[in-house]
Every structure is written in structure tokens, then in C-alpha cells.
Image (cartoon, rainbow over all chains, first blue to last red; front, side, top):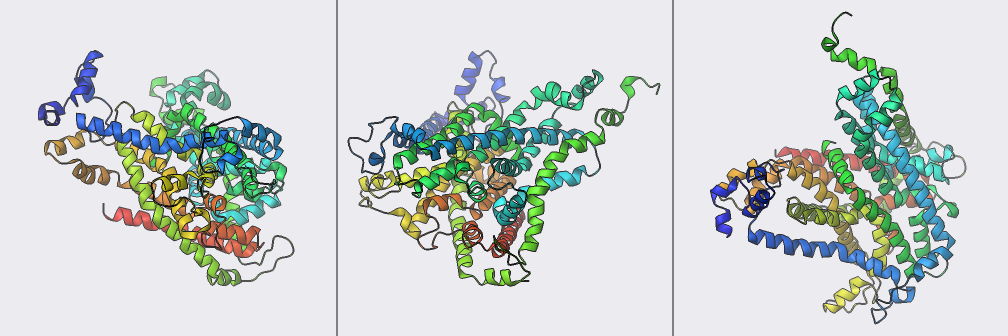
Length: 317
Length: 302
């Protein structure tokens, strides 16, 4: 089988299995030659089996630890720290009820939601405006300002932590959720501006011109005319900023000292280090799962935008 | 003036709908954020590093004292050494695993899309959350790491991973490699999908094996993408903080203290902001040099 598949005659049409599928869908074998390029493989039965087995095993390596996390979140604290026994799968919602009883943790959840949603919105709006400006407008200093934004991609905030802290302190933005939002927005902006500029550059100029003739102003242009065309880019920017700020740790740890403002990861680390009394590992597991779920749900729902944006931004950068 | 609309030059049309002032106004907010929260701190860092700035109280100019004390500080150099060791351990496995995963998911086979999603999920969840979960599974006797090793007969299951420097480092490296290879995968995959299929066909007709084709076609064509993924992962490793803070707090002693953690301690535990800022600038220089050196090395052979 492997030998026949390698016969020169089949090279053009791709793998036998594929061309058969294409024929049945009425497009004929030539359609498979026009498929998007897919790397060097041609399918043979052996390769398909290797793919199925290898892929399944690899998938288990990535999925099982996350399923285990869900199980841990359902175990009472004393089961989490005991060698596995008959109680291992006696799962309940008790840890999640404990979260509601522990103001430090649910306040952390609320703070994290507020901060990351605000960051996502602000980043998407600012990156959309700037992306439009950089892509479609010619003004003096455009290259310089765009370079300025891109250079900051190369200055990691971890490396300027202390001067940044002093700066935020001087602006009364430490111990403030607003300050954290502004900080996270800055961290995410360069990449998102880049993605948005690419989105706007791919919009043909005629669309804007006809809208302009109809009397649309700049903002109306973005909101009603260009929105459908650049929405994927804006979704990428918002999701990117949300995921980056939802469990960001070092900045939150540095800029917040008032415990009522702690975000979820900071309150979990306090829980872990015993700041809220004896450490309940079941509670810690449940808190971690709460931190995990929005990332997974949002990513799975919007991954097309996210992965494409990530690749285009990073590769072209 | 009297020319028909069709003949109107595109440049004039551009300035009509795109006045320069509007453009400047559109980019101004983003630029302002970057200036206020990145450039001003970066520039002021240089000034601060020449002072003894404490968190509270008055400051004075101390010249190069901070640099002298940082550069002769064994704690700082141990942190630098440890961070470089950690980076050296994880970089190649992240690239190799990311490449292998990309090979699996780059095809149009049924299931490739699902696998793509699955392999990338740990990266999306992030090291903060994964570190908390690892903390549970690294516990002696109860943690799944120990339970599995015990059932395989490798250990007796009572290993306290996080209070031993080398063991903690090993465990952290495995976790990080597992967690972040998805990013390398996504970037390499989109690079691989951009290579036209025809490029491979003559090699296939010549009977070149899979590995020969990867080595002589895919890898050379992806050189730039590979360089970029390596730079991204190296920079990420040099800036590592969260996973160490959560899992080991830099301990035992300062065995697993990274550079960023040393800076954090110096600034916010010992309250020596001047010295910490000097350390920060050393880190800025190190990350800059690494980026430059890697691009240079990886471009050399092309």
C-alpha cells in the first residue's frame, strides 16, 4: 500500500484517500491539488495510523493533567493531600461553596474580572484607533511613532519593574485597580497595535472612499463601515489582552498592597502561604480551576482569531 | 479640476479622506501609554540607578556605587547563573517539542485541528494557574507526580520536590516545557503551512526520506521563524519569575532564585530601589544582548 501511494502517478492528486473524498464531493481530483499546502506528508495507511496513535497519546499528555485539576477541585481538602484512596473520585461542590465563604478569594475573582475585562476593552479600543491611524493616515513622524511603539516590545516590563513602580507611585496609580488596568493595557498595546495595523492595511481604500463620499466621519468610519472587516483583529487584541492580564502575577504582586484589591492569583498565593489561616488545598485547587476555566472557554470559542492573529503578529514582527 | 473622477490621482484621494491631524489624533493615546509607562521609566531608571533611592526617606547621588555593589554581589551572580542554567535547560526541549507538535498538527488530516487546540491550551491557561496546580501534584505521597513515580517503582513516593534545589528545578523545567511548547508549535505550524507543497514534490520523487526532507527543505525555509520562536522562549526564560515564586519562593535558601526574583526582593523586601534598578538595567542589557546574539548566530548560516 505504501509503495503504490508513492508511485509518481499519484503525486499530483495527493493521497488516494483524499482524492476519493474530493471526488465524492463533486470537485474531482484536481481540487485536491489546489488545497492549501499542508507540509511534506502524503498520506499512507502507516502514516495515518502513526498520526492517530501518536496524536491520541500526545493529546492525553496535554489533557489528563487538566482533567486531574478538575478532579482536585471537586475533592475536599483532606483528600487532596492524602495518598489516593477510595475517596479519590468522591467529588462535590464543597470547595466552590468555600470560595463564596472566603471573601479574600471571591473578591480576588471579582477584581480579576474587572481588571481583565477593562484591560481587554481599553486595549482593543486604543489598538484599533492606533492601528487605523498607522495603516491609513500619512502624517509627519508616523514611522518614528510606530517604531517607538514597536521598540517597547523589546523592553520587557519585568526589567523596568522598579522605575515603573516609582512612576506609578508618583501618579498615585499603585494600590489602584485603574492603575493596574493602565499598566496591563500598556504591556499589551504594542503587539495589539501591530495586529490592528495589519488588519486595517488589508482593507481596500475604495471602501473608505465611498463611505467618505456618503459623509461618514472618522469614528463612524471605524464603527459602522470598517467594523466587519477589522472585527477579527479587534477580537484578537481583546482576547490577547484578557488572557495576558487575567492571571498576570508579577505586576499585580508589585503594584497592589491593599489586600481588598488583590487579583485572583495574588489572593491564591496568599491563601497558599497561609495568610488566611490554615491552607486548604481543596480551596486552592478550586480557585485555580476558576482561574483556568475562562481562559479555556474563551480560547476555544475564539481560537480562530487568536491563533491567526498571534501568528500574523509574531511572524511579521 | 475638470479632470474626470476616474483620473484623479490616488494620493490626493488619500489626503482627502485621511487628514494628517486625524491620524496623529488616532495614534496619540497608544503612543502616550507607551511613553508614560515604558519610555519614561526606562530613561529615569538610568538616573535612579546612580542614587541610593530607598522606598521611604530621602535620596542622594551615589555614582556607580549601586553598580559596584550589584556586580560584586554573590546573590545577584548566583541568580544570573541560575537563570542562565534554567534557560539552557528548557530552550532546546521547547523548540524540539514545539517542532514535533507542529509536524503533527500541520496537516489537513481529520483531528489535526482538535489536536492544535489541545496542545495550545496549557499556554493559554498560563504558568500562574499551572504553578498552583503543580503545587498540589508535587506534594509528598499525595501529589500525582509522586503517585505515578511510585507506581512505576521509580521512587517510594515520598519525594518532597519543592524543597530540594535540583529536584525543584527539574520539575519546574518539565512543567514549563509542557506548558509553553504550544506557542512554538503555533508559530512553526503557520510557517510550515506557508511552504508551497510543490517544493516537497521533487524531493519526494527522488525518494528522500521524511527526515531528509525536513532537514533540507522545512528547517532551512523556516530559519527565520525558528530564530524568532527561540528568541521568544529565551527571553521568556530569562524573565522567569511567577512559577518560581509560587512553587519554591526561590528556595531552598536562594538555590532557585531567578534574576527577576532577585530584583523584586532587593526592591520590595530589602527596599533598596537604587540597587534594584541597577540590577534591572543589567537585565535589560542582558536580554538585549541575547536577542542580538541569537539573531546573529541564526542568520549566519543562511
